[in-house]
Image (tube, rainbow, N blue to C red; front, side, top):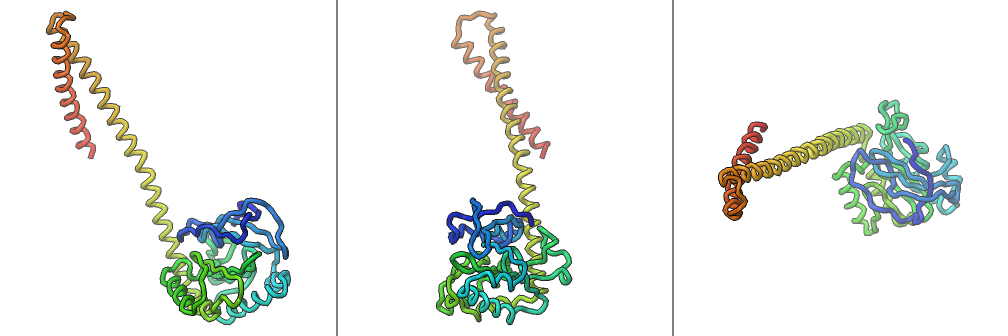
Length: 293
């Protein structure tokens, strides 16, 4: 994945609109920073363009291991992250691997299980979930439910049934305190998506996106063609109209012997002749169009 920019948004807690799921858009949280600034605890706020999950924005750590990442955090924030991480480790189905990804704690499908890797950067393993401590809140990136309306609806229903407020986009859950999170619901969401199911869902969405992209390309290529045909047809009509009028005036002038008197009569005859010529021209155009179909 190639980083488009490095910086920090002037409103680090204000997540702008989440885009609808489309595999032609990038991974992670979702708004674009504008300025470069080093954040506390060794973090950098960055955004990346990634074709599956939207634009990734996170307080990105330079840590290379999970332990190093946790050690960077203040004690209270570290305790929250450790508690959340424990839920992930306990409920994570067999086959997923923990590691640092995109500057946060990530859980992914290793290349040994899915050699194709992440389609926008095959060097990266296929991401499954993520956990990050931002400047003013925490984020859970649940890619495991992001592409499925069924999984998302069930997760929302289970969370709201606990009476806690859910601040969630398409796949990113944001909260400020550990008490705001029903850990059993998070654990259930993570544990209910085995590796095989997740890979099948991922590939299904990729195929759907490819079909949508192809249909869009066909539609966009057809529009100029249709516009071009219409422009040619309009130009042909205008030219035919002018030529018919000119021809009618000449004929009317011949009948009057080239006299300039009786202008009203001449104009009336020319108009009538032009109307007949336009009618004949229209019939020709219609006939050509029907042959073209």
